[in-house]
Image (tube, rainbow, N blue to C red; front, top):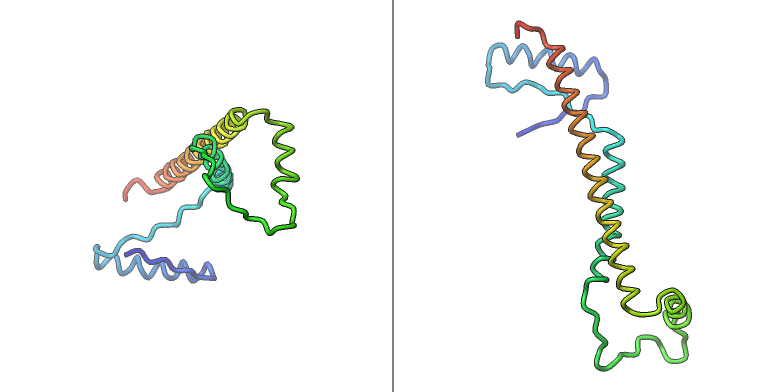
Length: 149
């Protein structure tokens, strides 16, 4: 089991490390304390951006690729006497920009696929940055260790 301690003062950390090193000298089964890895801020923000694009791209792709069928008996969702914004605002806008259902589906597929592929590419870059930083930190730690240990 890994246990992490949060100490507010750096002198506490050094005192704790010294005490654990003394205990480790007498009992080699006590694990060595490792410094927590810091993550790159750029990698973190790229991951957030990739997640955002993925969450917006996949639903559009699903809408474009999914089967759409008209219900046999349309259900009245809007209360009688009240205008539906879908009919008065969104419907005319869609008719102005898309002249057929096929054009609308193609738009959803192209947009969804673009956003999804962009998210996968951005996430790949974030993982690459994170691994590169981790490798650099490990090589710095290996260079800092004395040759006798």
